Amino acid sequence: MDEKTVRNIRTAILLLFVFTVIGLLIYSRVMAYSLAPTMKPADFHGLAIWEIPIAYLIDYFSHGWICLLFAFVAAGLVYEFVPKEAITKYMGSGKIAGYGLALGMAPFLTVCSCTMVPLFAGVLFAGAGIGPAITFLLMAPAANILSILLTGELISWELAGVRIIVSVVVALTAGIIISKTPWGKAVEKEHQLNVPAGQASVEVVKPPLDERLWASLKFAAYLAKQILPFFLVGLIAVGYVEAYLPQDIVGTYLTGVTGVLLASVIGGPLYTPTLVEIVLGRGMYELGMSKGALLSWLMGQPYDVANALAVSRIAKWKVVLTYMFIAWAGSVIFGLLYGFLSGSL
Amino acid sequence: MKEVKVEVIGPEPPCMRCQAAKKAVEKAAERLKQSEIKVEIQKANVMSKEIVGKYGVLVSPAIAINNTVKIMGRVPSEGEIEKLIRETAK
Image 1 (cartoon, rainbow over the protein chains, first blue to last red):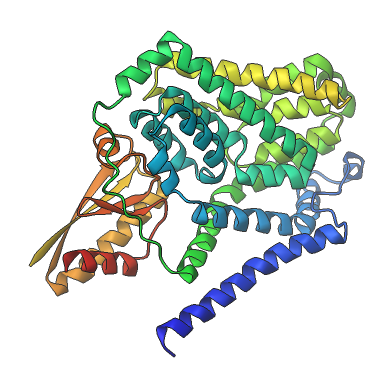
Image 2 (cartoon, chains in turn cyan, red):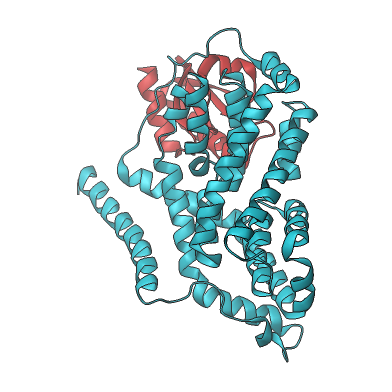
């Protein structure tokens, strides 16, 4: 067989796999088959301590594997095929293009946390300004493709949609506000390069389709390897939370205005880029947390400490504190608003 | 003997995927020794002003061969790098 035939066969096999995964998800939809855990808090009564995580994990994986497989494969494909050159080409070209790209590209690019802070620095140095850089930084973890897919599958697509809209609004507001503050401007001035960023020397080569498909599946596996161990620990924790946390405590403290405030404060430090907050949020929602509080719980991520530390090495602490405050205020305001509008505060 | 400069561009401290990219480049360089091509590997910081000034915003890991970014945001195979270096050295 010549090389071309081999490539075609490989492409066909890989495409078949990808379409099977998509097909499985559609099939589960058509059959109205739940991909989320079905155990209710009451089901845990009477189980021994060691039985709880096992029962919960079995319950989760008997439904959730399709959803997880799809989420990781989709994230891998999107990351591989999203035109990364667009960032290189247009990010330095102006404020509006900068904001647009930051909002449009961040969700697809940053399933891997190691790309986020470098891109923040790059955007800032290249002269797009601190505004788009901050927008990018906040948009990335709040609405990346993996967390949106899982929010949709595990909690509800309504909430996933709201999460995207609120992320856009908060990220944009934070970017614009910071670019107007004196300390934001100072950082911008300090880091702006005097020479226009050189673009002539980027000629990205595109490998053939079979290699790109294979690379995207490999990236999906890499993501899974990074995230799944934490996700498992999170699931076990959620099993215990559902089993032991009394419903009246959740009902009392995680509803109403207090609920939104409390959820926004707990959600932040809990955030790990590992999707645990989605499972845990779902668990709390099962136990009676209001929808408003659930939204601010999920929106707590942008003030994640590890990222803030990395960013503070480039931008000043004042900038970091400002965007953390705006992200927190946004999660509270929109939590209240969503709770009020959806009738579940 | 031809010389080719390969820059592996990633964050500092390096992330896992950038280390994988660097390893692939090292292996390719090892193979190319026999074909009279000397590969000089440099590690560059994606978060430095020199690199952004030189190449613009990059998605890491990125690999530049003789000052041209050829690979961005993915880990290539050693075979692919070997081919790219050969093409450049021609």
